[in-house]
Length: 488
Image (cartoon, rainbow, N blue to C red; front, side, top):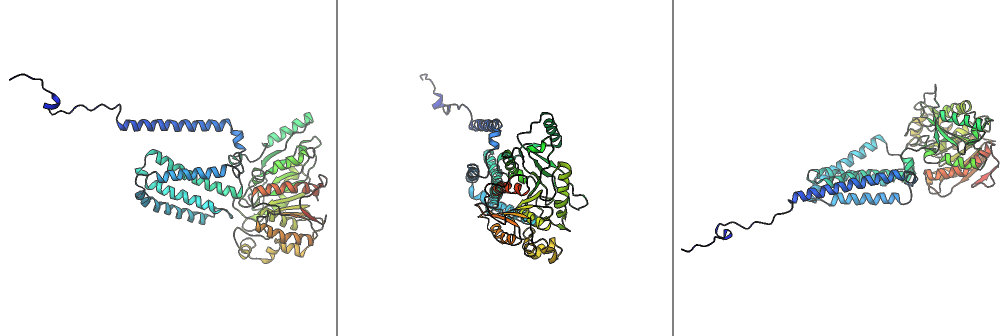
């Protein structure tokens, strides 16, 4: 038998060796995840650095107009679609997640209804985006155990963006935060404290040179013995306030609305900027602004009257605040030296307080105010029962149409402004302005384009400030008045 070489592949039953892979598939997937994660971290760091490097420019970006609101909405939609569509078993996860999302939606709507945290006039888009957030959250929960890390991140990001977009939609309507810097805490230009105020005054005493801008500060004006606990007020003083001669300057009280707070006037309506621009045209001279709290809380609604439920708010605004300004800021608060103006609820307040206290106020400004006192979303009878103890007589004593019909007000001046698209405010203006004229009030009224929003109130104060300053006998009569005026 002849010898021969055995082929192991044929005779031993062994298969040829497979070529070796560089790394197992799981390792490759792990490597891709690591690389992706590193990329995301680098991108986030780069974004943070870019934000820090350009914080001043970013702070001035409008978040109520321009490119930001639609960009935010489309990014939210894109991330939400990505989180919902990229799934291994869509039907199964939807069957689990949708009921959870619907349950979360019901819970949220019930909570909002009970707590009344959503302000009156909030847009429907606010609710739409909150529902989107609840549905996405439900689907995220339903598919969490089957999802990889990037699907989970996309889901969490989609929920967060939906909530942010809901807030953005409300902000588009109310314009509480017009820019990024206002959103992140800046409530006024050139904000100082009492120590800095004293330091500026001392510097002017030494140099004789007035500052080139006004100053805003927050102060506590306590409502002692009034059963009313106000939040800190804001005060703006013009450059002339620091003059060596210590001039007595007149005062304008600016009243916010509900929901609202004193800083609304500087944070969102830019009253400090408007007043500084006016002062710059008058050698640093302008009325002092005091922005007191009229409600005691963000969602309170006192209608600026004395009541058993809120305390003696009218006494606080008409007596305590002027006295504080006279004592602590050397303000002139005698006859013809104090005006009062307000937006929304504050507009009605300014009118009512002036009609009931014509010896305190020389003029008033009503920007988008209601025609009569209205507590929250109550009707007239509910308002009378809640704020006026069920007394129609007490209600009439704080109801402008009644007061204007039954009294005359010689020497008082009033400015009414309502945005043309704010139909409720226009209706109120069309009722009150003619009655004001008949009651002997020197009346101006205007209905330029605008909504029930801070952008309009910013413009309304700009237009009326020279007129108010003139009525306070501080500056000359304006060459032109952007309103229809009678009785001047």
